[in-house]
Length: 441
Image (cartoon, rainbow, N blue to C red; front, top):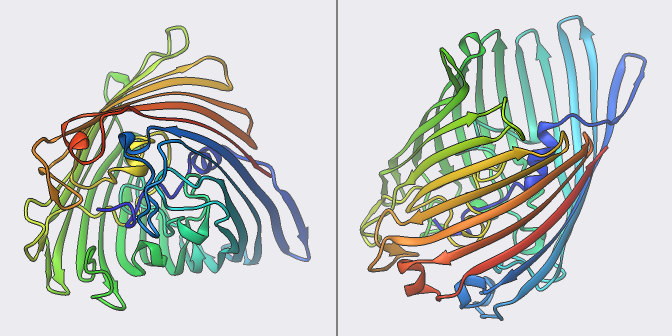
């Protein structure tokens, strides 16, 4: 999969906002309730030895710029939600949001945006009804399955969208979701439409979650992808693809309260537009907490594998297509702020990851991550290479959450090229320094 198909479209700051409550201006009159909200964010990123020394490649014209790239991004997102109770167990609701984003400076290191890119547009516009355990929504809206491994982000923030790194646009357009939730069971039937940069495709599917005793989340999903024009994107066909996903999240074992396990397995099958789909992806992760130790460290290990294609010229697509993966936290599912943003995109990829997080204070988190990237098949962007080893990446990050409404982060990343990356790019360490802050009212 190429970066034009998908990459980091949901920013760290959005994930932080979603995980913490925030204040909004609420009102109520004549049975109608509502809330005004405002989100805003800004980031500054400095990159050196871009593409391991090859330089920044502008995706519009293929021009190679220098190895030093400095840029800034910003966005603002005002929103409104409304609700009206027809009866004690029946409620109408609606919501909407506008979003304006902009890129300044040299443009991002991946060449997806330039200085001056950005626009304002409607980000959300939906309405729905809730009747007891059932909910139906229609319109431009957000939707996520599980951890966002496959379905979460409906918009790729590139070209005139601006703010590629922050990725504030996430809603699916022309979407409809029928949901049921009762006790430990939740299910959804969904129809989602991605933006043009994500292939302009529709995903129709079913999802089921079961949380027995609150000790584990068991889930399964099946979806089918369709395209209005099956031959519009011959380099990344999707029409007729069927996707199946099994997952176990937040699993706890008896007697091991500090250990948490996660895992997912997914298949892509079917055929369409003269292509057969035969790809797979999976990961297994273990988190172990030490709550009694100073700084309450948390250790994590994850192995993830996304299939590659050993014969891109045949009529079988064996490389995993990440579709509309999202971002909910460090390395999930943007794996590596350098490699995941600009080089590999959860396809033809094997990743070993070690993470250490410490809680310096109730508002400061200090952490580090080490990644080892290799290729599943000896090919890079369809070109054969002689080595599977791709790169090692490291990050040191400091997250600051002074209030439920404010989030800030500082991170230093450096990636060392290995055999395959040296063949296609260069021999220099790719480094980035990033800072961002967000506010949500």
